[in-house]
Amino acid sequence: MDDNTPDIEITELRKLTQVIKDKYDYEFKDYAMSSFKRRIKRVLDLYKFKNVDKLINVLENNPDYFEEFVSEITVNVTEMFRDPTFWKVLKEQIIPNILLNHNKITVWHAGCSSGEEVVTMCAVLDELGALDKAKIIATDIDTAIINKAKNATYSMKNMEVNNKNYARYQGTRSLEYYFKETNGEAVVHKSLLENVSYRKHDLVQGAIFSKFDLILCRNVMIYFNQTLQNAVLNKLHESLFKYGYLAIGSKESLIWCEIANKFIVVNNEEKVYKKVKD
Amino acid sequence: MRYQVSNKYKAVVIGGSAGSFQGITQILANIPKDFPLPMFLCLHRLKHVRNGFVEALSIKSNKIVAEPFDKESVKKGGVYLAPANYHLCLELGNTLSLSTEELVNNSRPAIDLTFESASYVYRDKLIGILLSGANKDGAYGMMKIKEKGGMTIIQDPQESMINAMPNAALAATKIDHILTVNEIVNFLLELDKACRG
Image (tube, rainbow over all chains, first blue to last red; front, side):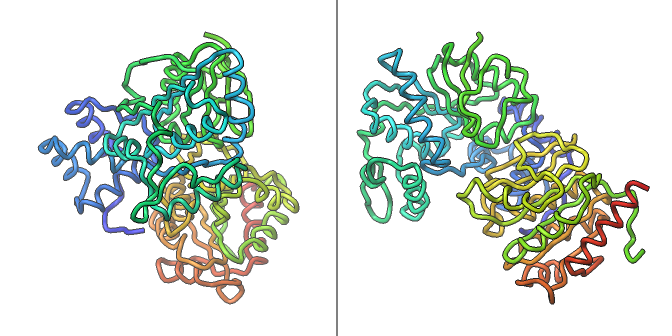
């Protein structure tokens, strides 16, 4: 790690989040402190800003910079078939259960990042012969990353880990079935993503916009403090049909959350919950 | 007493990588079940193997070793292991947080992140212990612990199966004690007594 910049104080972060709120109406004050501080430090290092005041100054005077700033502080680490056993549970249990009672399935990827999980979902649905029954919405706060998700083009280097995940998931095909290699990149077949619409949406301040059978919000809320986690979980709960499913990261838990009593645990190991109360 | 132990310390962080498994097992096997300080373990591990590691560490341990969930509260005497493919950090307000941020020093979990965030929360009341390992992860974290007035301990490079990691810490900051694993165990036993004192 570099250590060219001094420690960032909480008071500086408060000042920064207030400026962002006032000028851009984005709310970062309830982001988890240690990761948010690191993201800001990363931005200072990246743009060679000597301190938080400099960053504040740039944000105040260059509105064009803001989108880039949001991209840089957002964590975009994801994989296809991340946690293979989770996807196995979705394929063998959750999705068939939803389709038992409906002829269609609506899915929301809340915090879709570069779209690897969306590709994964479509591949799973395709393997179940249910892709044409699906309507999928993928959202993220970061415009640049949504465009990346839409392009669905990934470096072949990243495909190594994706392939390993796919093997652990015990897929019925090979992952190569879903993309074409072009100039060292894996271009996902457009037909696979036909039923996906991508849009910008801020989980923190954005309104509820639809109802879903299944919401995936994995490793997104870990960047929020508990207050914000509770607020976002309320929105996710409201965005689910009764008896709809919520999937969170394998090391996230609803145990401490106010809304826990409105869900039951469907799979504790893979952290899949079912909404049982409105 | 050989070491400047006192009851001022509130937490212990331990980092390790290649060649540290035996040392960490020995430490866990010898500290008493009711050792009062929380311990945060950040050990380099296979990124895509979620199960098995905590079980392997638990076999000889007197304490329950747990991979925490995000925002879990730190309990007195709890032993927390960074889960596979997540960084483990301390937050103000006595909670743990997890993160999937980029690899740091080619590692996730990265010792630097656990150590630095712990130093921010526990300040001079933190003890950092760095064991055997093949890269420089942990050196920056040890520097942060020292900056905040905490205590720094490395496994004796002569004893370490791979000494790059303890040596990197030695080059980066002042190290209070260079100890063999046996001596680290003795240190923790004295600390145990002091904290109960």
